[in-house]
Image 1 (cartoon, rainbow, N blue to C red):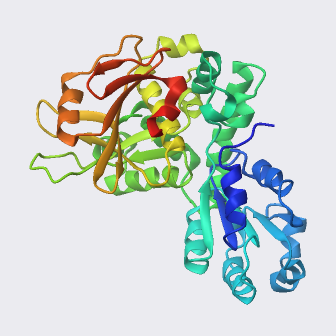
Image 2: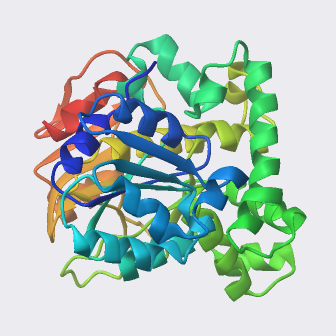
Image 3: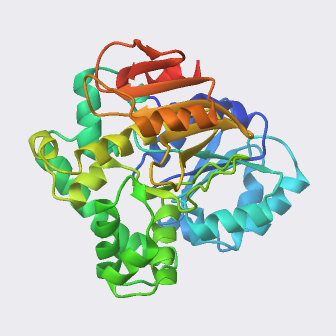
Length: 387
C-alpha cells in the first residue's frame, strides 16, 4: 500500500477540527486513504458510502442515525449526493464540539464545496488528494517516466502494462463525462465536453484563449468559459493565474491552462507509449504540465503559485512564480533538455520579479549553477525547491 503524503496531516487535523474535508478527483484514492487513516487512529470509525443504496437509506432520518455515533469518526463518502446533510452536521458539531467527528469525501463537486463552506464554516478544514506524485511512489528515472506517461491515478499507474493503463484511462474519461458530471448536476452533452477537453489538451501549458476555442466549438466565449470551469472544478484542468506586481509593464491577464494528469492528457491525444510521446509535438507542453503539477502538489500552503509574462513584443516570461503574499520567493523555469539554458525572456522575467532563488527543472541527474542564484534541478529532486 502506497502511503499518501497528506495522511499524517489529516490524522493531526482530526485531533484539532470537528470535520475534515477530503476532496479530489474520482479514483484518486480518497476512499482507500480514509480507510487507511481509520486503521491508524484510536477512535472507532463508521464508514458510509452514499453511492451505496443501503448506506443512503440509513440516512433517511440522518439525525436519529448519526446521534448513535457521537464517539465515532463518521466517514461520509460522496457526501454531495445528500446536500441536506450539511446543516445537520453543523448542528451535531455545535451540540458537541469536539475534534474528529466527521470526514467528508467528495469528488470536488461545486455543490459539495458550497454546501460545506456555507454550513460548516469554522468547523472544517480541507485537504486535496491528487493522484500519485513522485515523492509518494519513490523517486528514480524509471518511476518518473512511468508516472509522466501513465499519470498518477492508482489504477493507471499500477497497471500491468501501458496498454492496460490506456484502456483504464479511456474508461475513466467516458465515466467522468457520462456519469460523474451528470451526478454533480452538469447537464452538458458528453460529446460536447469531450470535444472541448480534446481542444484544451492540444492547448495545455498555453494561454487561455476563450474566443479561439469557442469558435472551434461553435459556442460563445461564456459557454467555453463554463466548460473550462466544469473541468477545473472536477480537478481535470488547472488554471494558473498570472502574477501582477507594482510594475508599469503591461502584463497578460489570461490564465495558462494545464491538463492536470498527464496520463489523461496522453490518452486524449492518443499517445500510448513513451515512443509516441517522444515524437509528438506536445512533448514539451506535457513535460511542463507534469512538472507544474508535481511542484504544486509539494507546495506548502504558505506559498501561492502563478506564472509571469509581459505583453511586449519581447515578452518576459517565467513558467512558475511562487510567492508569499506579494513577495516572490522562488521562480521556476521548466526545460525538457539535458543541457538547459535560460532564454532571453526568462532572464528578463527573473530581473523583473527578483526571486530569492530560481530553479531550472530538467530531466537530468545533477544540480549545478547557471548564474548567481539560478540552479538547474533534476525532476527527481523537486523537494529542494522548498527547503
